[in-house]
Image (cartoon, rainbow, N blue to C red):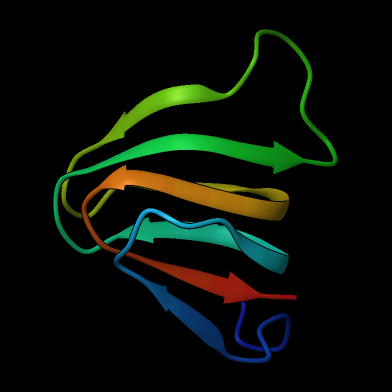
Length: 76
């Protein structure tokens, strides 16, 4: 992780939308991302995405909603 890029994080463990600007989503337990809005995404809709414990996804996320699990969303 590039610490100069991070200005903290948001802990997410519920199923409501969390908005902001995040550059990495890190799973601290097995997680399913219900949906996410990603500024620099191409391809299929980002829904029902499973993450195993320790997995992470990088991008420019502006909204993240979980179905289950717990993640750390690192802020930009």
